[in-house]
Length: 204
Image 1 (cartoon, rainbow, N blue to C red):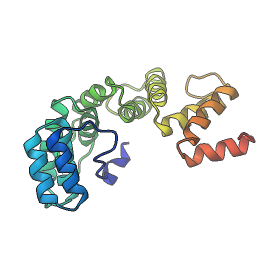
Image 2 (image 1 turned 90 degrees about the vertical axis):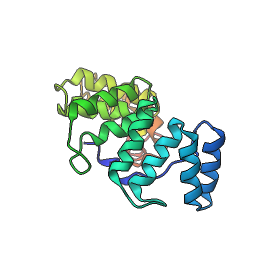
Image 3 (image 1 turned 90 degrees about the horizontal axis):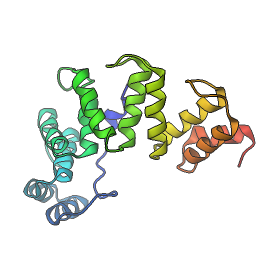
């Protein structure tokens, strides 16, 4: 569950809104001037800056790695309404390597992110409902969240939904046309398994 957490990579500058100090912090970060980046992010106080500070502390990027400090900044961003921070905080609550697990709290934050249409959080909820992890197991709820995640562009969700249509599994009727549609959407994002699925089906 939520295996991707330990491969977090700083993603500043990708589809993010710009604030003056955030932009300055981003420029400093890209130039390797981490001290200035941290100062600018802290001065900015925006959700994006708080999130990036959390990830920097999590990864020890320009600072001594400090998981507690990382969670403090990630929580601040989450409380400010940042969907990516909410999803990350939700996943942290499922783990025992950072702080005491609290799956109910984790689900709460994942829902907050998913309610904003954050596709990775919707995928996380799919996994939770599929496996009964932190919630009562429910195929209907699992497929609902998977579909929303796929519709919001998450390639892994698109691939899994395509596979469900191909096999008629997961409370979805078998439908090759729908399967190809979702495989193709995932493949267009470079999803290797979806590309192979299309190849095996003889579809370009």
